[in-house]
Length: 204
Image (cartoon, rainbow, N blue to C red):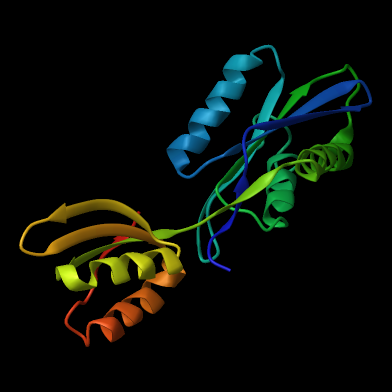
């Protein structure tokens, strides 16, 4: 299926581990800048917290940028466990911040790994997700007699018309789920005996 899962919106959960309180905030991050802005917003929202541990994965599949931070916790005890939970989910464009308010009892390295893992898992256990569909913009110039038929083909291939202009010929800009561009282009070529060839303007 085209596309991949992303968070449906900002989401937060909370767990208590030996008097330390852990808040897990999850958000949509289609870029590294968006992820960093989300992390900054959590820091600003809870400035009294002891740690804001984070992990993010921008992209999906073979095209991923990752980021991770222990934010003052012992190296490897917090950020990497949160990233491991994130990697284990079939989801992209996601940032996770686990905020800790220290409760007075040290957890030790093993305890920290478990606590941050549990906090991240708790966050994802109730996270609502939606499918992000990658879309491609196509341009067509076609004669008036086939206009209505092409409009039907656009609808049949899940396309959405962005612009139409009417001069000596009809010009259409339409966006399609990326996996529909080849079938649509083939159908248009069949309809017009190869006279109309859509122009691919790339992903949008």
